Image 1 (cartoon, helix red, strand yellow):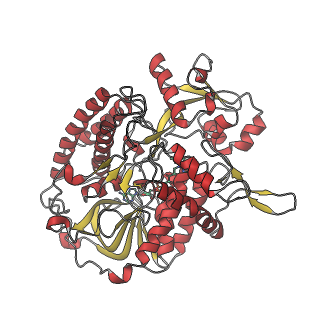
Image 2 (spheres, protein in one colour):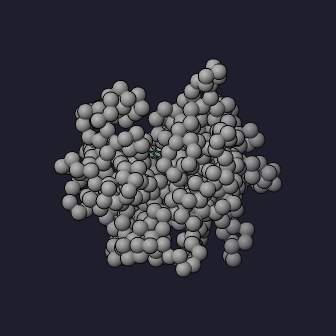
Image 3 (tube, helix red, strand yellow):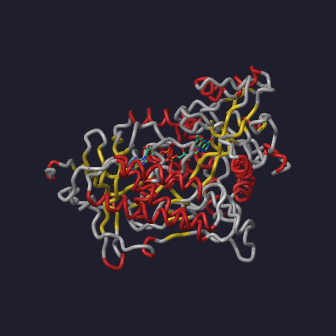
Length: 552
Ligand SMILES: Cc1cc2nc3c(=O)[nH]c(=O)nc-3n(C[C@H](O)[C@H](O)[C@H](O)COP(=O)(O)OP(=O)(O)OC[C@H]3O[C@@H](n4cnc5c(N)ncnc54)[C@H](O)[C@@H]3O)c2cc1C
């Protein structure tokens, strides 16, 4: 069955932004002051990791006690030798103005009254921060930010928003030798009408979030399938530090809960971790007990679950007064109640879950990638801020700071950059509708299961090799399937997940040490015989990029 190619809509815009989370919309709202901006969201506009962020945003807002130097130091310590100090400084120094912008546009942050009657944002403290520097909106900060940004974007005359539009691949101009390579736009799957449309743009900004959906258990919503990382890789961009995936130690374990996060503040306020028989176990792992850093707690839970063959452990704060619990954790309390769990009276069943993708598309502080005209901001990137481990609440900050700096950079280039002409249509002339959807659903499950079992919290070379064999097989199967059948949402996401899984495994295999979030039983210590190295993968070393992006 052929489709009439001339009927494919061809959109043009100054700047195409792929993603409507904190990074994409911060960028778009700045850039809309000087350009026409088109923003794509693959689901509803508000859906994405940003919406679910609970804790807050880190920045030095009160310099009577805190300082930029202290924020830099805390970030470098968490990053375990792999942060780029210049990038960390850049981010910390631009934190205050980024937060001020959010306050100015009306994000309802929690405030506190001072004795002289004045009020100021309430600052809380999180693991790894040596001072109170987390601005927040109760325990639903991401929702407050995301809904404010979406409201503003919807009202802006220079911003056009497309919901349920899934970017498939970047359209590029490639010349022999690489000179003059450039991004020209993207092919985008309209999920409502089930067809691929063409978007041409002078600049493209990837703001498509992380890839934690590659793991069986994750705190991320379904759309975190690493599409931007896979697209950038296919377009010839390098990735950095893909082996560093942060696992949150405590995610609600319930068949109907899709990875609901139980904030580490529950442990911070006195919650205990218990085995099914009620025994506390953290003392066997770290003298700080439940207040040990996230990666240590996640490894301890993983160890106990594997040792005892149990499905979950328990987080218990029921010894605290019920009013205290309800006041401090209104969202968590209500969410648990929905699943029949009263956290004021009983322990919460929890498992660790993939939470944050520290690696991603390599960029500089302006958000520039390896491909001319292509920018990346937010969780999709590897900027050098997080190194081997993300410091809590630095990620929303990164979205804001880099969203703004990318906009500043494009502002200086827009007038000298031409709009691309008519781009090649998406060619479906040689594909048919799929005859066996089960291939896609089976491979989705298989991939996420082996990534969890073999490339998860605790790794070994043997487990990684096992995963590599499987991912190679899936890569071949998916490539064949993709070449023969018309695209669907699940197929496109699976193709990206398989690509990202491969990048994670390749990166993990290259790191012959334990550092930050990468822990391997074969090399349980950091390799201090040489200075720490980033894991940078280059597409040209792996395969020959296709000459055209159109599917044929
Ligand atoms: C439960 C939870 C709690 C968190 N708590 C905190 C916290 O307290 N503090 C903190 O700093 N960080 C926190 N984080 C991390 C932080 O929320 C994210 O890193 C950040 O929100 C990422 O923003 P983003 O704009 O890069 O991506 P997202 O907010 O994930 O947005 C991604 C966007 O890209 C779109 N998209 C994806 N693929 C495509 C495609 N192919 N085509 C078109 N559109 C696409 C999506 O539709 C979405 O609009 C938390 C994360 C989670 C999951």
